[in-house]
Amino acid sequence: MESWRCMMSNKRIILFLFLLICTRQVYGQQVLTLEQVLQEIKSNNPSLKAFDSKMKSQDAKVEGSGAWMAPMVGVGTFMTPYPGVKVMDEADKGAWMISAEQDIPNPAKLKAKARYLGAQSQITSAEQSVQANQLKARAKELYFGLLVANKTIVYQKENRAIMQTMKKIAEIRYPYNQGSLNQVFKAEGRLYESENMILMTESEIRSKKMAINTLMFRPVSTPFEVDTAYRISFNPTAQLDTSYLAEKRSDIRQMDRSIDAMGLNIKQMKQEAKPDFRIRFEHMANRAAMMPNQYTLMGMISIPIAPWSSKMYKSEVKSMNFERDAMRQQKEVMLSDMLGMTKAMENDLINMEKQLSNYENKILPALTKNMKVSMLAYQENKADLNVVIDSWESLNMSQVNYLEQSKKFYQMIVDYEKNIER
Image (cartoon, rainbow, N blue to C red; front, side):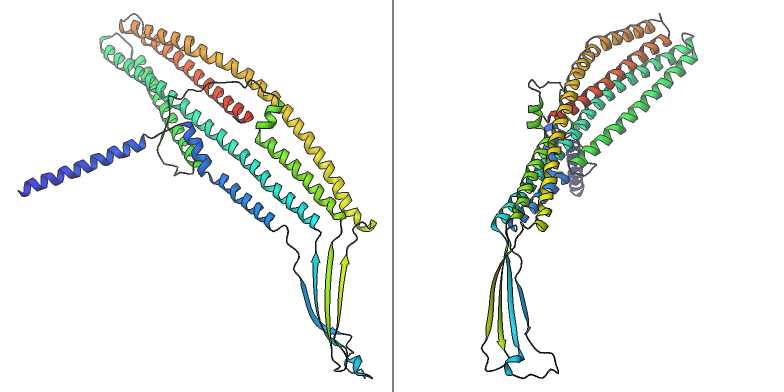
């Protein structure tokens, strides 16, 4: 009975370990699509969240833009003689004084200030879009790099398996004088080179996954796999012109909002020509019992149109108008440069797509057939191992060129989509 219980306990332990291993394997094989990665970055990246806090801070300033200056309250004496001075009359003893003073800003100035401050969060919102576009482009670059690296390691493992087979055949033939020892060593060297390339690619995959996890604000060692079924294709934008870029580009929108904010700042500065107000009240309690209490009530108004004071805001308005014109000109130059660069990218991408098609449909299939023929000839003892290695190296070189061209193609797609903010 006791042995039966021990057996059942051991089975439970084994079952638990098996389920744990399976669970870890399933988690390790989690597949993240590109859209999922981009959504995680949008939701969790701390650099984007920082902009949300900054916008809340700027909006909070708008709430306080209509506030007045704090009132001033004072206590002292009024027309009090210095100590030691002989007072001839009770009325000459002076009075105790309490005063209160309040600045009253012009309502038009407060409204203009509120509109200007309200525009700041819109600039920050556009700045957040610029940062989001950069993070999106970086994530695509890493994701596409992983797709290429996965394809690379498949090629490398296939090539390693071929060289392992060739090395075994050479080792079998050598004792029967059907091959030379240098061929065995040459195949062995190529085999080790293949293993080194696999190690490099595996390291590259780990680094890119860590970078993607960092963008998603997850632990860097969190395992996942990319969607290898994802197909990258180039789709040029039909209506690509400066109007399209002005509408889509977040940095251009940021510049537009900065120009608008500059206009609001100019309007705010022009309000400086309008007067401000001040009211002051003073109460005097005479020290002489026979003298009545007195007060002073005074209203004041500023005169900002005075020539010696108007120079300040007039020169500021003039300066900001020139600065706003400069920003508009910079915007036009940026749009023109972006359009020319993006159009050039379209031309290069169409050409690169044709080259990759040639690699996939013509070059690589032909070199693969060449290597298979060389292997068959070697197996039938009609050719030596050097011929197989040469054809193997030619195929490897073409695969490397194809993968490098794919990297450039995908990187240019990332840059193109970053430019048009697709």
